[in-house]
Length: 408
Ligand SMILES: Cc1cc2nc3c(=O)[nH]c(=O)nc-3n(C[C@H](O)[C@H](O)[C@H](O)COP(=O)(O)O)c2cc1C
Figure 1 (cartoon, rainbow, N blue to C red):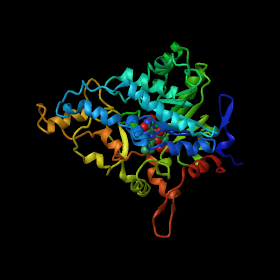
Figure 2: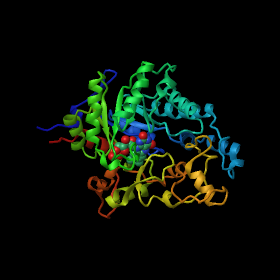
Figure 3: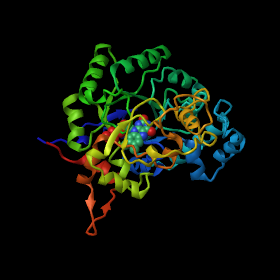
Figure 4: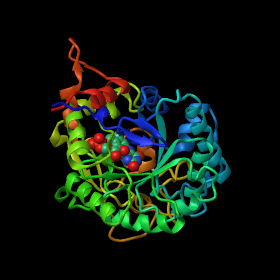
């Protein structure tokens, strides 16, 4: 007997889709072009709203970041960045503009969601999150995936939006415990999530685990979440994510483990439509297992998986909060503290070691090469040309490979 992923469709709003979501990859790695390429073949794909003012400026030639720099440039030498604030009207405008532009180019065959990370605290966590979520809904997004945080208030922050019950809303969790916390709040607001993504320890980006991440196993967590949902009478589709590299592995999660679908990313990070620079895509494909590490160079407090030679790791650049500042919380970010101390601008002893990187700047410049644990397998599914170079696949090709390959 053989099965393919498309034999197990997921139903949203009465329509069936192949049970595969392309995960959000910030900053602008899961581009509009990638989402549209997958949508065109009837698939589900994510945009990311990370550093969206910057992304919108590049796309539409606007000056939102320049304006912010102009307003705050005098703070460059000041350690306390608490006066830096995002103009919420401009943030909403950029998000709406970006989302509505992409949505206007949909064919209507698939779905386009946006990934919203709570950890982008933007020096005013609640207000900026509220603005981002509501602007994405106003821009006509099909769905919002809440990630990188517990999102205890996110449902509440959206509840007055006219599209609150129409758009799909999902949450990424890495444990049943995190899901329980979110569900308690969702029940209180009277709006349950439409899907849950369970992200295991082999995923790319930030991990929802501590340094003991290797002791966890995606399949066990998915089974545990499914049991808790069933025991509590919730019928919500669960997508498994992290390290699902082949159609066979995807079918296993849906057919044998009981997931409704899978979310994948690493294979799409090296597609033609991915926002990563070409040389970085090729570097990912060449990567070996020993080139990958989970480290603490991210200032979010979460561990992050990346290639060991990511240029961000050794970089000592001046913090660039005046332009970005997406990770500021009460005027602070852990990179700021160590950079100011190392450069004699802050009097603390002992002087902290270089243990963090300027995540905003380096993600923006594609210098943090984050990837899933399966990155070393990319070479096994990528075509080598006669001259020895790699032929990058299109997003449609990777999507078809996951969804349409017959599996044992
Ligand atoms: C390059 C890259 C960037 C990512 N960025 C984000 C992000 O901004 N927000 C997020 O919630 N997840 C992010 N992820 C996680 C993915 O959305 C996805 O859940 C996970 O990587 C799936 O595992 P896989 O990469 O092994 O297929 C990222 C993953 C990769 C590979």
